[in-house]
Length: 116
Picture 1: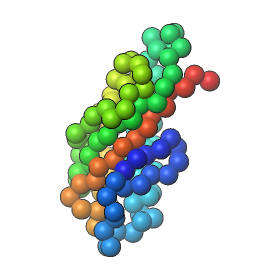
Picture 2: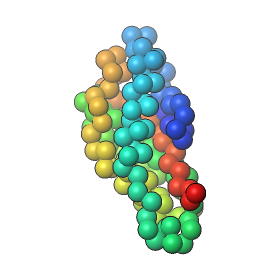
Picture 3: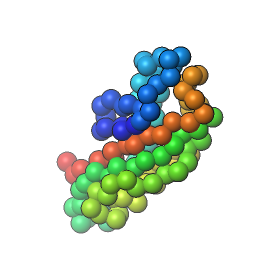
């Protein structure tokens, strides 16, 4: 699932028939908000006026554990890429997946680092 900046989120795999798509959309919105709360713009990156968007992939298990965190597409700056990975790592455990979502869901989130 690609979690675009502050917009809508779609699961990578098709939702099962039993899963309410509104429920999953709400879950993804809350997941994005949790990750955004953990995002920190590195001071050195601010001083160097670095900007970019890092695409991070990860898996959420049915109990909410976040694992398999990886950089899919670099922002072009190691400092920003590391900050994006750290934001997802900091969440650690999200809310459990909605009933019917399966044993896990894979997500991708684009984290934007922009000055002003």
